[in-house]
Amino acid sequence: MLRISLLMLLTLSLSVSGMARSLSVDVNQLTTEWTLSQDVDGVLIYFKRAECNDQVNGIFKENVLVKIVNTTDRNLKLAWDMEFWYGEECRTCDPANDKEYHYVLDLKAGEAVEGSCSRETPRELKYYIRFLNYDHIAKLTRFELGNLGVMPN
Image 1 (tube, one colour):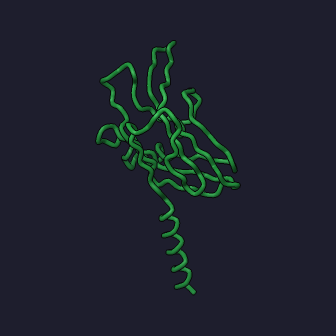
Image 2 (tube, rainbow, N blue to C red):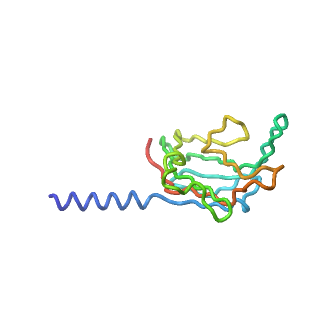
Image 3 (cartoon, rainbow, N blue to C red):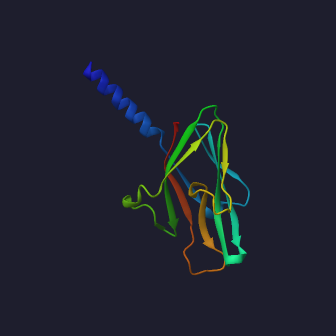
């Protein structure tokens, strides 16, 4: 009996770890139109580039906007570890940052959420690329959604 339980536990842990995915995006390949990047168990993930300018405060920047659509009839939780690459350097890959860059998004059945240039947009749906009026500040070249997984909510 113990042998069967251990085998079941090992099988379960392998299937759960096998479900986690990684989604890497080259920022230079993004356009200003929503582009489907991946379907993760019925959750569609789209990205696009957008200029997000605040003329009053003199802030001119470009961001990645994210749209996530739950195409299922179940409430789900999408979770991932965010990795931001500037040139060849990952600035958020330090294990000490694990909690800060672990993102979780609750999605109702059939729900679509979409990032915008608004300050109220959650960090999961908007990523900074670069300032448009400053060339000396590092630019995002790639980002990765690591350990990407969908779970029941």
